[in-house]
Image (cartoon, rainbow, N blue to C red; front, side):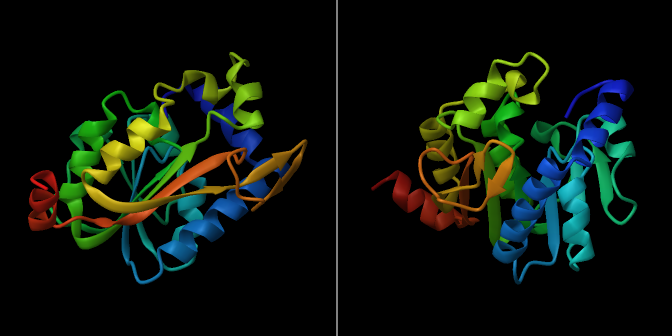
Amino acid sequence: MKGTGEEMAQYIESCRKEFWQNVFRLELAYLADHLRGCREVLSIGCGPAVIEGGLAERGFRVTGLDVSREALHCAPDRIRTVEAPAEEMPFPEESFDAVIYVASLQFIDHYRTALDKSALVLRPNGRILILLLNPESGYFSIKSRDAGSYISKIKHTDLKAIEAAVQERFAVRGEYYLSVEGSTVSAGPADAGSVLYILSGVKRDAKQGKEEAHA
């Protein structure tokens, strides 16, 4: 999450609004449920790590990676932060039980490289959770026309292409999540109009990947 100090201060202030608190609450509940059994979690493109702080409170050991020093300065003290591009994440192989992207993958220039790196830093059978903004949702349509919205800075909107790239490295399934009606946020109904499309699954082992590539 790139941005000036002033932009980051405005973002942090907006995070305190009831609407965003409800969004974060639902996203946190989803992540915590799907990360059960994991200990070391890497969040790529974490920004000021609002949700990641919630995961840390629930007992996860969270590392937040972002390119913005200003954003990381706003992160909770309880999480470890690292300033670096997702394409150049400086972690040893097999360092984490899970990697998460909380509405961040679509903003990364070379997201396929980031996915390659994610697979490398995950332990065998490591978990991947990718929250993608759904371009077909009414919420996305409204926000993408607002030059001041972070959604207007999105780089990748082809969910099929993204999912295909993820499937090369991870065995995942996709599902819709999070509905917005005016100022009301809810977990469902989960359909093609939902705000998020979430890919969740595990790292493919090298043998499996080679077998499927030659099938």
